[in-house]
Image (cartoon, rainbow, N blue to C red; front, top):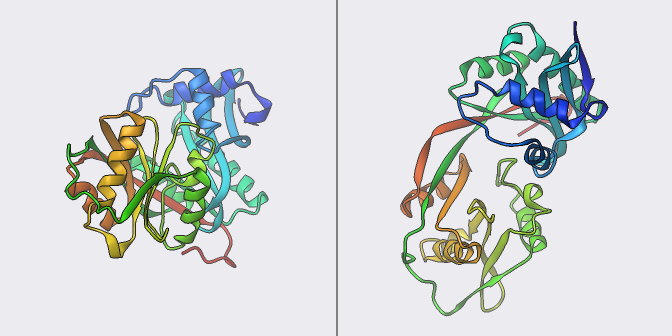
Length: 291
């Protein structure tokens, strides 16, 4: 008999067993141990055990949905951090039950929308989410590579490039109200990181012209340059200094339908990965129009 339990009522061992079994035949090989899994999925990913559910067959974990709540794109959002079912148990309605529990939990938490990411070529999963009421909102693209050895155009001496704090980046990010950044690169994702490099580039009068946030692994989480000052080498200067601080040779970035930034990333020679994802959304309240 299949039963369903909140993840705060089960052990982390059971949660990890369900995760490992559910992704045992996944197209992308996942290599992680229980401690790494817990630190990531219940850390920066933003999932919480009281918003997550485990499916059990007797004492065997066979299905898992992780959920987390935060403000995202201006709305209180429940994101599905993962959904997986053991191969032998697929096609029995377990995913539908977990998604329903996920949705009801979001409604109880007064969330205004549901959100998730799914590989575009995973047609079975995309169809499942569409049947539930999700719609593709954005397309995620992944780029990686080595930065050019010399910036295309070094910024003039009238600019000041300096390290800033997370609070500086987070405060500036809030001013970009029309800028969508996907869940795993937005400021809450790295808010507690002690290894992120934060840099800003300014005019002598302290007007901010650009900012970058880069992880210790070379992930470009945030890169912005004032439109009036683009094509002057500022973006390259920010990336080179951040990469030098982090001591990384290769960098990578995930873009969400940002043509301007994608053009810049292509121009500096980063290569596109073949895998793309949909960001899918389901509004939950008719009195709040999700844009």
